[in-house]
Each structure stands twice: as C-alpha cells, then as structure tokens.
Amino acid sequence: MSSVVLKNVTKRYGLHEVVHAIDLEVTEGEFAVLLGPSGCGKTTTLRMVAGLEDISSGEIKIAGRRVNDVEPKDRQIAMVFQNYALYPHMTVRQNMQFALKPQQLEAKEVAARIDEAARVLGLEPLLERKPSQLSGGQRQRVAMARAMVRTPKVFLFDEPLSNLDAKLRSQVRVEIAKLHKRLGTTALYVTHDQVEAMTLADKIVIMKDGNIEQIGSPEEVFARPRNLFVASFIGSPAMNLIEMTVESQGGRAVLKGAEITIPAPSGAAGKIKVGQRVTVGIRPSDLHIAKPADSGPVYDATVDVSEFLGTEVLLDLRVGGAEMTAQIPAQEKPAEDQAIRIAFDLNAVHLFDTASGVAV
Amino acid sequence: MTTGRVRDNVVTYLLVALVLIVFMTPIYLIVSSSLKPAPIMFSRPPAFLFTPTLQNYYDLFTMRPFHLQILNSLMAALGSTAVSVTFGSLAAYAISRVKARWMNDVAFWILSTRMFPPIAVVVPYYIIFKSLGLLDTPLALIIVYSTFNIPLTVWLMKGFFDEVPPALEEAAQLDGHGVVATFLYVVLPLAAPGLAVAAVFCFIFSWNEFLFALMLTGSNAQTVTVAVMSFWSSDAIQWGRIMAGSFIVLIPGVIFVLTCQRWLVKGLTMGSVKG
Image (cartoon, rainbow over all chains, first blue to last red):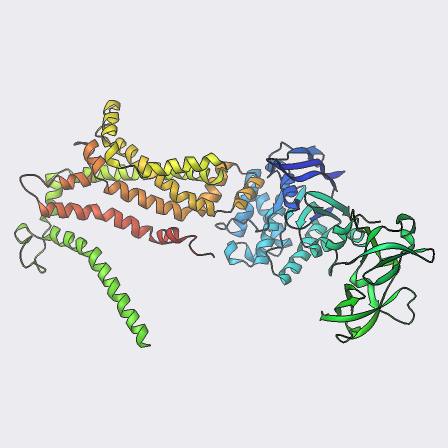
C-alpha cells in the first residue's frame, strides 16, 4: 500500500502557481527524497504533506486516508526541521516530553519512549542539557529523537543537514540511514544536495520549477537521466555536455560539433535523424586516458587544470573545441599542459534532443 | 597603559561622574531633606551634617492615611500592569503572526493612541466615569492607565514575538498543541525579557502618574502622587513631608527595576547584535 500519495497536487499563492499538478507515490517503508535547486517547490510540497500549507487543488493521502482538510497533528506525521526547531528554554528530555504531551500517555510510557529514543540516538548523557549546550550534530539528533518518540507513520525531513559542516553532515547522514533501517518508517526527505539524495534514497524525486522532472532509484536517475536538467543536476562532477549535430558519414550516423566527431551510439541509431541538434552527455568518470587496447573513439586532449582529490584527480581538458572534465585514478595523473589522448565507451554516452532537452 | 588610553579613561570617568551628579543630586536632596528638621531645611550654607529625624515620615502616616494611598497606588499600578501585559501581549502576538495588509494599519492605530496627550482626554474620562459611577475608584485608574499602557506593551512585545522563529510554533502544531498551549508554553517563555520590560514600564508609568489620579480620584482612591502634593497648599508648603512622601514614591520603582534589571538589559538590547 502506498503510504503517501499526491494526486494532481497544485499550490498557488494568489495567481502565482509554484507547484504544478504533481503526482507522487511513496510506498510504505520507502525513503523518498525530493531533490532540486532552491525555489523548485520541494519544501512547499513537503509542507503540504505536513499540513503546514494548504493545497490549492489535488489530493494528498497518508496511509490510505485523504488528509487535505486534516489538521497537521492528526496526520500521524513527525517533522525534522532545517533549523532543528528545538524549544530553547527546555532540556532535551523536556523537548521530547512536550512533543508527547498532547497524546496524554501515561508517565511510564513517556519515559520508556524517551529512554528508547535516547539510547538509539546516543543522547543519554545529554538529556538534562538545553539546546544551547549542544553541538549542531547533537541538536539534529535531538530533533530526530523528538520526531521518533511520536511513533509516526511518516517522517518528514526538511533539509536537516544544511546547517551542518561537511564532516558532521556525513556523520548525521549515516545516523539518519541507520534510523530508517531500524525503524522502517516511511520517510519523505527534502534536500538540494545530490550526495544526500543518492546515499539515502530508495527513490529520488527530482523537481524543477514546481514540476517533477524524474522519479527513480539513485541508480536509475544516474544511469538513465530523462532530460538535460536531470543529467546535469545528478552526478558530481557534473556531466560533460556538448552540443552537436547529427550527420551522415559513410552511411553511418555521426555526431559532429566542437571540432570533434563521435560515432552515434548503436542504441540511438533509429531515434535520431540527420540534421537534428543533439546534446551529447559524457560523465567525467566515463572518460579515461586512452590505452592501446581501447577499441572506442580516442581523442587528443590538453590538460588545462588538474585537481588532486586524494584517490582521484579531476582533469579540466580541452578536447577539440570543447571543454570537458575527466575523473581518473590519482596514479594516472598527467602533467598540466600535457597533451594526452582520452577515450570513452560509446555505450556510456547519453544523447538528448537539444531543442526539447529530452533524452533520446 | 598608553597616554591616550589614560586620557580616554579619565574622560570616561569624568562623564560618568557628571551623569551621576545630575541624576543623583535630586535623590540626595529628597533623602536628606526628608530627614532634616524644618528649621534647617533651607539653611545657608546647606547643612550637610545634621542629626536626622524621622518626624516627617511619622507625620506622613499620621496626618494622612498614607498607607491606604500607597495601597491605592499599588492596586492601580499592579492592576494596570496585569491588564496591559495580558491583553497587550495577546494583541502583539496576533499582530506579529497574522500576515495581512490591514494588520499594519491596526498596529499603527494602536500605537497612535499612545501618542494622545493625556490632558485632552481627562475631562471626557471624568464624564464617562462619573456616569458609570466609577469616580474615585482604583478601577477607574486601572482602566485609564491601561489605555496608555496596552499600546506600549503591544509595541514592545511585537518585536519580541517577531524574533521567535515560526518553526518552533510549527513544531508545536505538528506535535498536537493548539494555539493557546503553543503561545503559553513555547512563545511566551521565549519573550519573557520583553514581558519584564513591558511590566516595568507599565508599572512605573502607572505608579508615577499624577494628572488622572488628581482628576479622577477623591478621598477613597487617592494615590501617593496626589497625596504628596496635598502637603503643598496656599497656606504652607510642608517640604519635609513632601520629601518624605517623594522618597516613598521612589522606592517601588527602584525595587522593580533592580529586580528585573537582568531581564531589562536583555530585553532592551535583544536583537541589537546578530548572535
């Protein structure tokens, strides 16, 4: 059964529409991530699911129940906010007690839930501290504990890691993944960080300008981006994109542009026509220094800049008239301004119609 | 220490001393005059060394029912403070949270009533309270003082409520708390310094107020400010008793400010530095 269903959901502020008739299903136990740039409507969508924003049209169901007109407190959800939203004048324990107060549970039950959440999230030594006495990572764990004690049907996360530094972010990300694995509760998570999305999600929902661009697993959106926006948004470093034109050469379709020629991938043969403007996408990790055994296309390239990242190196290359980035193992690092030859597997090439942006 | 820094310190301390002299001289005069016997009250040169006497304080409580007048002032001041802080903070919360264009007009109208000159409304109030049978009662003063204190409270508290992140209220809302519980247990505690500031200002204004107390009260509800001035008559000005009464009028305000000093400083400077 789908735990969260959005059907034709639209949000308008006056005459300005910010979310355009989106459809989404999150199955029970699934960790779904709404991913997109600032202003794409992901937080608005999350807040509509939470009931903190009214929906202009459409329907939202949680655990099979229509919740359009249901108060947030009755939707069986719990939310972790970007800025933690911990009550600063209450201790960690009191924060959790206050969250449970409306449920009018027995004191024993309240204590048991708080102790369990504290144990799971490593908060036992911190229960009598106030939020101002905690680090950012600790505060975020308290926010998760406060959500956890309510035993909701759906967890909502609104960019919970964006206020943390890089190191803490990866630590708390692991905490969130462990928590989800342990509890198995449905989660809807909003972020603009694709690393969070790729590492946490069972399902990624990529949004842009109030529309859903693609829904799929991390592997799917990485390997088979549906359009140029998804292709350039997912993957770090970003996909190399070169505008080319389809031409015929010796009876075969080739892609020409930026002073280079690429044979059209065999899978695209029937889908493109001569004269069509296409954008070729190649991921930096699919480029490698050419070896004698390479059977695919090989091109001369000049290294403009190399960035050492420890186990790998990013090379800023000039290939013909195109600028490309390659991601190669650190031990293969060439010297800067050195002329090298690069190669790639044609099957790793992505093709998009330049006019519409849609994958071919 | 460099010469420049020494000079800066000297200038600073001189300025502080000057300010202290300006503010403390009247208080010194009040206290010393209240303890002086009448013959040396206006001696030239002024008598700095003398045998103090409590006769003026004794006369204050025996020639007038001063303890009842203190009680009247306390009732009016505390009553007005309670009413103003309660309704003012509720109004300020609504103004802070309801995002509508007309709310700015409402807020401005409320604040504008604070700017109204009291002398312009004292006669209408007299007529209203006379027709309601409320003349010469503490309730009349509580009502009048509240009309001036509520706008002040609204203006002060709105700023504090604006500082409380809406996410805290959304978190409480998601937990299942209603508007009242959220206001009482989440928002109000965080705006407590503002409440302290508002309470102090409301109390001091009400306690020190003279015009309305003079016009709207008689023998039953007379306040200390009017009672002190009753020793100033066309026949004689009883300086010693006036000074003794003035000192007693000073005390509650000083106690209030000293008690709430920590919150006052926090409340008046909150938001001035990003932190």
